[in-house]
Length: 82
Image (cartoon, rainbow, N blue to C red; front, side):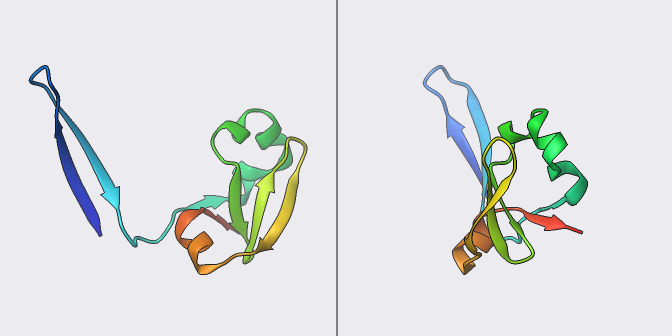
């Protein structure tokens, strides 16, 4: 589900945004979340992701395992595509 929202500003302008409901999360290629790419600036974009059913977090030098991904995690975080 996607909801498009128009926000009327006080100066007469309009700002457009959208919200997603239960759409499937995007996937990201494994090459874009390698340790080298993440250390070179990828951590600004992605801090947590799901890899092989496990929620992982970037900690500056590598990925650590937080836990098995829950249903809520699967709705919130990107998945690694291998």
